[in-house]
Length: 237
Image (cartoon, rainbow, N blue to C red):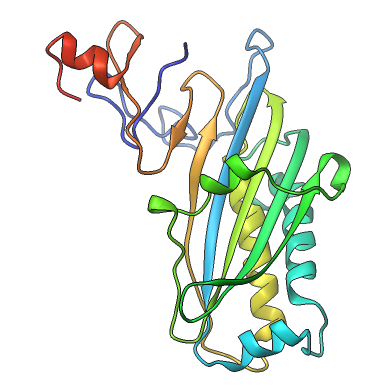
C-alpha cells in the first residue's frame, strides 16, 4: 500500500524545492526512463462570488450577450488542461487520459440552481461520478456562497504517467473561472475568484491525499500506518 500523506511533509522528510538545482537555478525535473508510469488523478476547485444579483439572474436565464456561460467555461477548462505545459514553464507535457469539469451555480442561500459537466478522453463529454462529487466540494463538502450567489468549479484530471496532474487540474478550474469573469464582467466588475486549490490527488510514490483528511503518516521505514494501527503501537496520529 502506498504511503498516505498529510498536507505537510513528515519530520523524516528533507524538504526542498525540486525545481531548483543546488545552485538555485530553475530546472525542469528529469524523469528517468526507469521511473514507471502509474495511474494518477488530481481534483481542483475554485469559487467565483458575485457582487450584485444580476449575473446569477442572467446566467439562469441564459441571457448574457456572449452566450451560455457554464457551457463555455467548462469547455475552456478542458482546453486549458491540455495546454498546461505551454503556460507553466517547468511543467511536463503530460498525455491526459481524461478531463472532467463541473460548473455549478450556487444561489444566495447556498442551494445549487444548475450544474453542467464535461470531460472525458479526447474531449468527449461525460457525466461526473457520484463518489467524485463528494470529494470535490472543499472542506466538509461545503461550497462558498455570497450574498448574491456564486459559481463553484471543480475539475478532475486523469493520466497514466511518470508525474502527477495537479497543475492540469488547477489550470482547468482557473481557465473556467476566468472565462466566467470575461463573460460576466459587463454586468459585474466586482466578481471575486477565490479558494483555487487542489483538494484531492491519487497515485505516484506519495500515494493518496484528500483535503482535510489526515489519512496516515509516513514513517522513516517508508511504511504507512492507519490511525488504528498507530494507536495500537502507541503512536500519536
